[in-house]
Image (cartoon, rainbow, N blue to C red; front, top):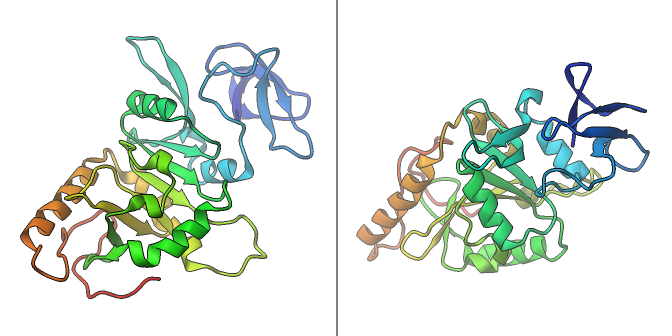
Length: 265
C-alpha cells in the first residue's frame, strides 16, 4: 500500500518508517528497497485486504495521475462490515481499479458487485501475446462507426483477453510499454475501452487518448451513459440493418458527433 497513518498524517512510506494501517489499524512497516516501489507492508501477515496485489511501476504511475486524497480510498459496506481499498475513488464516487496481475473470474465479479459504480484499467502488456493479438485482429474485427472513436465488433474475443469479455463494468486496456526507447505507436498510446453489454450482438469499443481519460473520468458521477450508448447503438443498428454504415448517438462523454469514416488502423 502507498499510504499509512503516522503521527496523525496520511503519509507515504519512508526509510525506517512505522505506521498504522488505514484499513485494519494494524502496524505496518516501510519497505524502501532499491528494486521495488516504496510501500507499506503488514508485519507478520500478507495483507489485511484479500484483494490487494503487489504494485508495479505501471500501477503506481496510473494512481499518481489522480489527486492523493482520491488514492487508496477505503470503501466500507456498512451492512456486511466488509472493507476494501479502492485504487482510486473520485470526488464523484467513481471507483477506478488498476489491474496488472491475473484475476480469477469469481473475484472479478465480486469486486464489481462490491464497488458497483466502477471501471477497470487493465495492463495489456502483462502477457506478451495480448498486444500482438489485438493489433493483428483489430484491423478486420473492429468496424468503425460514424461516431469518431467508437467501434463495433461481433468478435471481441479476437481482440481482448477472455477474462474481461463478460465484465459488468467498462474495461480499459492499456497496451503502452513503459519504455521510452520504443518507437511511437498510435495503437499502443491509445486506450481501448470495452463497454459492458452488447448492441444487437456486437460489442462496443471506445478509443480515447490518455489525456482525455485523466481529464474527463473524474467528472463522471455515474456510468449511466454507458448503458445509453450501447442501447443507442442497438437501436441504430436495428433501424439501419439495410444500410452500409451506422449512425450513432450524437452526444458522448468525449464529445464528437457524426463524422465521415476514416481508417484508424
